[in-house]
Image (tube, rainbow, N blue to C red; front, side):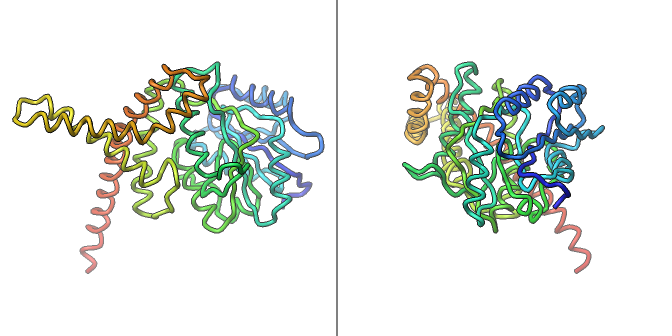
Length: 351
């Protein structure tokens, strides 16, 4: 434990996005509790902008890497100099909510076996566009799968790196984040799976933290592709326990049915016999897909203030994302097979 340790170190990795960082720091200054000692550590991952003046105004410790190494390495660097008994990891594009540190401390102090506390992001936000609110709604919907009706928290096999608190000892016991992940994709999933192999972690309903989700459809689809391409080889190598939501076998089956529906649609318009069979199969796939996402669409409709147009757009984005996820998964599978064949080739001469 570093000398002069305090309750919490708020560790924020950042790369550019200075206005959002300033908004986060302002929200911490406005809402931080007086009865919990904390520090702010901003780990600058090679920003083109100078973040130090903003950090200095908020009494934040600033680290800077001249070369961008990715958010995993930035979080690790912040943790190495942090003095807190616990870490609160926050991404620069979130907004601190009053009561966050109080809730984390209450839960960690009340249960010595508990090692980490994760928090929800918003369902919808009136100032955000359709793409942002789609991502917010579907993540919120997925997270609810971890919590029993009427409960305020639930066990989770993961960790929200954008707004999660963790004991220093637990963080160090798993060796921090895997810095070989250079993008803001999958380093969070990998860390959460390693952390929860031996440690108790929970997801808490409140307070809800605002997160600026992707605001462009192209960026969202890129994120889906990258995450899927990284998940497939990771799963084949490590076989982590599947979650009840985003990475469930049911979700994977649903995405494959969505892809099959598109294939049957293409076959139905080709000049061949029995095209009606392909049209029927396409219709069955679409109906089944729609049935499986009905609960999500009902939630999105409710959370958006009963906006039917938003719910319809959510259905289209969800279905369209299936093709991107399948493409990413196939890309990841090919990468895994190339690595496997290459390893087999290197082993062969030694036999």
